[in-house]
Image (cartoon, rainbow, N blue to C red; front, top):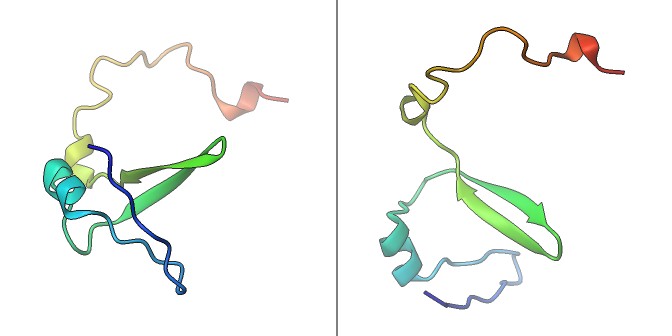
Length: 70
């Protein structure tokens, strides 16, 4: 799945078609850039419906909150 792209003079990068197809990315989809050392991790921002049930079974007691931070 190795592919390359070139940064344009307008600081834009086109994601290669093979990558878009493999990851099912669509035009207009929103992404987040996460700095990782000398590189960047590019991830799609999940839709709210994709997050449903993510915290099922999470402990509601004893979790750390801002009140106990310095």
